[in-house]
Length: 581
Image 1 (spheres, rainbow, N blue to C red):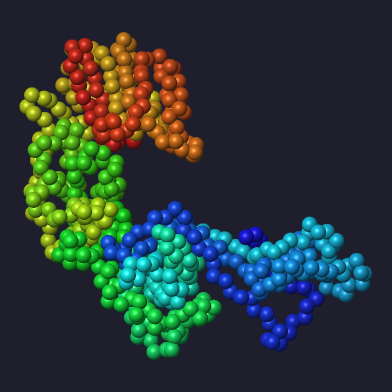
Image 2: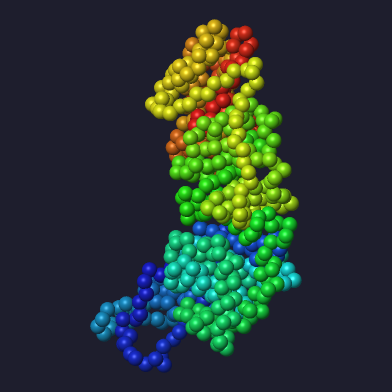
């Protein structure tokens, strides 16, 4: 519907103040419209019991539709607004017929022309029906509950009473006033069925992070809500359990008695996990946070706790998709981390071993292995060890979308993993870089090869004995101008010494984006724009470089630089994520 957001309010300046409460007119209260956009529903259990969604960018629309909920008639000439009657035959022009100007001066009106508003004579000045409204963005949490037969809850009394109780318990849990969190219900279509969604939202515009905290404590909040409802002794609702200033308009929907019967033992039994999902000694439940946030949350309570991250062989193929890679980089700055390999390591490829070598040479990372037969049924992914308590996370074997968390009394026994890089007939060296390559992009190529030749006598002798015939660099993620510039400078620096040599750059295709890059660190928005810029750079360099794109899934994960010499021997250089990143 159409609405207008008022900048301020005013009354007719000739109205006299009074204290006659019988003349007061109360405009009916209307619950705000609350929507959560582009948020996925998350189940609280593998059984049909409860599901929720939350967003930092929810939309709240506050509005008023007047005495009869039919809107208002508005004069754009003077600003006077009057409620529309509950009669569609009466037009806004009729409501404001012969109306006087809202603000016409403090003195008596002497002339007839000053009495009536000019909007009476101009039809375009009268608008309606129109609503008063205001919209804002804030944090929002939505909860849908299920009945014992698996159908969604569609009872407005149960939903509205629970929304108040959950709001009050969450506010007490966070140590804030309950006025800082709003609560309401709304009808939705959930998988084809009508349901009543319980909604909590932050009162502060922009959000304060309060309402979305409900997902972390939702089972506890439901238990506290039941306790509050069943321990009160009022008839239906009172100030002790569910009535306050914000809920006085919803008294007909508040009834504490329905909560005890709905949140019965069967409901909480459905919230708990079946035995086949209980992979830990105690406190087995679904993890409602992403694994990275869950680990950070538990580590924030004790920075001295030990961390075990389980790294599987499929994760080594593409570390960028490993859900704990960013957590590892962040946490390793302040604490030691153990990477556990829960599989047979005898058949690791050279690419896998190169990837592990990056971790093995970090002073705060230890790599250990474990007998895969001692693993629980689930796929364990992380552990936070705090004294005698071990909080763990694992994915379900039967339903990989479910992340289970729980507490063990101890960890599995680990053994130290010693990394053997290659067979005896091959040679390999490891070059660690600190600040030696710091400088401008134009200097990077020369600095890179100077460091390589200085640290690797094997490569230096090979370069002095044979000539480079071709170069091939493979990298899935050459997507922004700065890393491409670094890569080109490294290749061009070598081609300068071998003008008859050729080079090839292979990288992954880009997904089209409507967002245009704003800096040299921003990705190109499409393959065509990237190819055009790179081809122009290659042309200006006057070197023989071929730039190729293909699906990143057809490319190896490792960043590799292959040098083919005139005797057909090949030197492979594996580069870690710091190169071109």
